[in-house]
Length: 49
Image 1 (tube, rainbow, N blue to C red):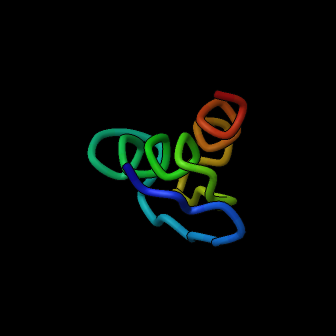
Image 2 (cartoon, rainbow, N blue to C red; image 1 turned 60 degrees about the horizontal axis):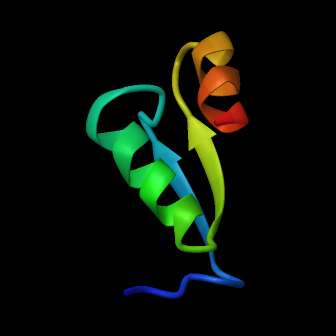
């Protein structure tokens, strides 16, 4: 439905919950997503997905 190709998004609190879901959906629609949270290891896991 949405084409976010060429767009960038910085999602804070994106290691779990709503932030993670938003980050995943934006990436699925073509956006370059930067994930951010207080726990770097969890951010890395989210970014790999």
